[in-house]
Length: 126
Length: 402
Image 1 (cartoon, rainbow over the protein chains, first blue to last red):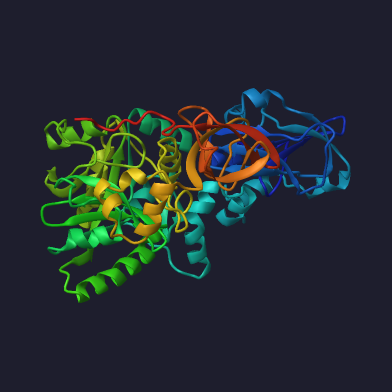
Image 2 (image 1 turned 90 degrees about the vertical axis):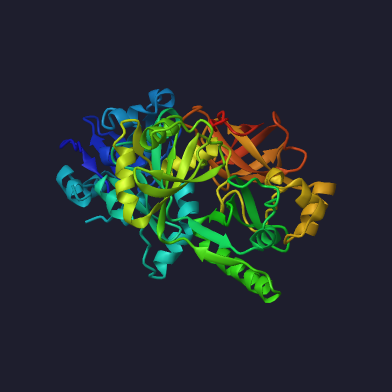
């Protein structure tokens, strides 16, 4: 179970990377991709969408389930990973390289509420 | 610590998990303990991810294969499924055929000994109480129906059985609880069993049932299944069930498979899941199961709801079960179906098909927009997507032909 130490995590299994320019990149964890199984379809929001923390941000479809991905923090969608439209399986292959989207945070303070890799590891019983 | 339950909440249950586990979850909510098959410990030891299903704790998948990989393995090789949770009964007495013809649509009278048929238990309105496989033997009927319907099936059958007996009918029903039911499915299933029994099964037709000894174990072997592939459902004494399964799995052509693969396999094969695609308001005519009603039964009736069903056969139905190939996001249970903007029905099962790489679904639509090739729309998360009515099965059936 890979859990890069430079990322922050949520209880709902998203990872968040704070970039130098103050934006954040978001994806799902190794634990989440493994639980979901073969990902066949992703529904990502359009650029410019404003989203509140905890609200559904995207949907990931595997053979067995349609699963919501929740916004780890509030903000505006800057960019989505369009490569995933043709290659949704990239999320299974490397969930930390296959980011879903980039967000411009609207409440910087919310970043402090996210979990460290170690806290997330404990949370998933790893 | 986050529990598994928390994770289930964070990653919402699939259509499949919702529909399949509805009864199970409600059972869990009332504190009822989930039942375990004899193979429960074996599943856990082999990485089975156990989930509540119809009141039982059953493996949804195993750690060595994802659902998609397990699905593909079954289509290309062979997989073993524990289906011991299903309700198996043996019906004896000289009036057994007459009794079962009074509660199902099957023409058991004309069914050859050793052969079986898919059938349905109907209610007074012609709705489907459950779907079932009836196998006719020299001295008995061997009947298998859904685990999720076991309680209501038994209550229904016993009520009618009592009335039948009170009128002097000679028939008796026994639940087979001293055997487990183990399915092996896939194009290599026959070769695996042939190797164990040391003889060819070429003359064993699909949908026949035989009593056989496999490596010293007395089994009932039905050449049937729920995947669209050739395969067998083997009834094994409880005491031999684990050893028997180990023997199957020892063959490199065989892997364990769970409910996840079973659902996508049966959907590709166009086979109905009770509770999703069939229920007590749907008649066999609407469900496209008219073929299960024998010619004689159509003419004579004599089963519950026969008047309604005979009327539908004569005058048609207002809705029909169809297959759909959906563009865009996969359509799942409950997705509304539109024709030229008008709501005409809904999806009852759907998933991305691992074999065809398309989104497949089945559902019910108004009569008139049911023909193959009809272009419809299916709404997924507020967006209408193109869908085409498609003949089922979505993949060619691999049933053994003698």
